[in-house]
Image (tube, rainbow, N blue to C red; front, top):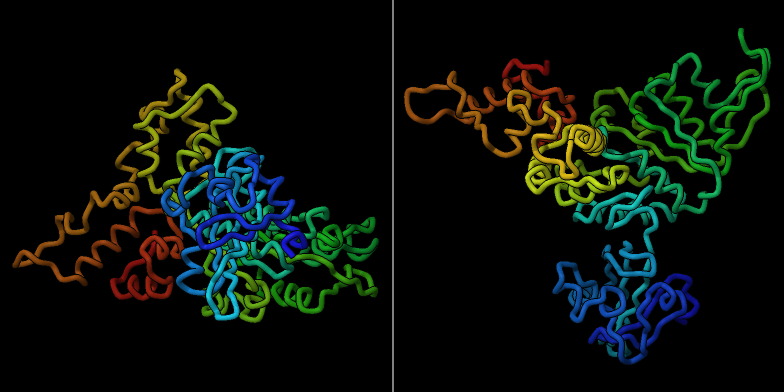
Length: 438
């Protein structure tokens, strides 16, 4: 039965001993599996004790406590080096309902790495691992995926990973930039046009949907599609058919849909700026991408990754420590620019703190940095005085929000996310204090 599983799989007992193994598992690891002797953690982790004693969650313990299947994202030592594996652990019970062992099935993640590697997502933080699990599960189906996250968090990279890990990987991956999509040319760009369909149409042209036949279409910044165009997009998704401009012939659309937005689409739905029916069509599997401030543990590896073109250079401890405290409003894209900037400025192979770009070191321009480290309190504002030693929470809130509005460059959605509240709540608070973003 275990040989019938096309993914690496083993059967282990409650003592972590491997009792059965398939061929796919054997070729995945360099260490030889000895039936009734080898422990799973010896083969996959090169450890002498279970993985929970080395900072990782043990899926066996989760199965034992819940008596149900569990999954976890682990870093295994495979023939390709340190590789991410999406592990599904299923408890096997006897006739009396007693757990006698576990079936472990591995799904190797090819689009990410725990070590800096070109053309792969890099990281090992918990938010990063959780995102990898979602990407891997979504990639195995044709469900519509909505990627949501701040600007610079790598939404197009995730979309590409979804495509490359899907059954459509050998077909086209077409990116449609919604921000620059001209409303007048919407149908022509997406569906193509026939010769003479309109003034200037001197020849027939294929649309992007036609180009993507059998593959994946990625609508980047879907929130920027005008309401009038949203109707046409909804019809395409619902009917899986379209007509090129100037043609009467109906064509079938065969593509996998992935959309992305840095804006809160549900908030736009509530305001009537985005169609509710379209939202639920594109949000079959929402994935929220963590910002870099949530992935602090990944910053050293990302720095090394971006330094790959400058193999002789590395960051000093102080420089890395500073970068790990910096909030990165521009996320991974900003980190990449900072690393490349610092590498050019540094005269030595070691990039020191003072080699970092001036704009992230200068305290006057770094309100967000100060706020991130809790070095500035809204109570420090000299205009906030009371007859006793305490200010009301409402007064503190007003002063704090006024400062945020005047000193930061975030959108309303980004600021709400930073403050840990909904966009609607932030709107109400700003209105209460008579404030607006500059």
